[in-house]
Image 1: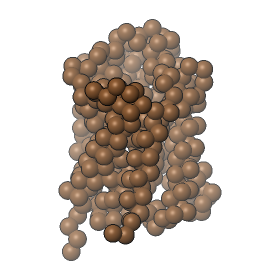
Image 2 (image 1 turned 120 degrees about the vertical axis):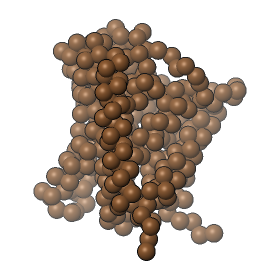
Image 3 (image 1 turned 60 degrees about the vertical axis):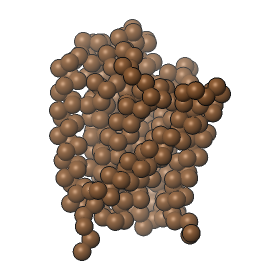
Length: 93
Length: 212
């Protein structure tokens, strides 16, 4: 099978998911503001959890759990946005 | 900039849900009219890329990080309505599967990082390119400016929602949110320009796709 451009695009996205353990663990802009301005404790925890905080459950290695979460999410999003586009695209004459 | 549950009051959460639902409904209508065969793989790759890139927080100053939103990139390549659909998919999966961004705050998050970010970046990009002409420099500058502004405007909207919800007065929340996101926006602008330049170098035909 010939490699199409979008196979490469998906591989690049998966590559980013694989290096995701390198991401900064510092709080993001909104979290920083919420901490500094004293309303971070207003945040409520989720009512259910699937892959909370990008850590794949039941995996002991932190980096591997993050990579698995990233790869899972990247594939879910690819399927969802690709599938949505297939459903919505106009019928070609 | 994903708002968690508990930050917004019911009125703000409900109002942003209504506006976002309307915007997403209209996006579906527009996509239904204009989306063609060639858009399909790019929609998939954009959804995957934006999700993965959002995991990569970069430090912006002592103790604070930011990450790509990706709305500008999606809107510039596919158009603001298609961009809104992609961002909505990303935000829904992040809220439901990864517990990133509250489910009650989903309307606000789609409004800030979807609708608003896509439209601001798309029209600023178009404005810059109409001044410079359709050349590489103009498109990269337009991409940077549109992407930076998308983060800044989304952060401003977020601060207004927090203030209206009684979480933090506007005089406090607005300068704090706008200040830190003016820095994060530089990262958004640089990443957007780098990806656009990569697309130009490898598959410039993707830039010619009809915008949705």
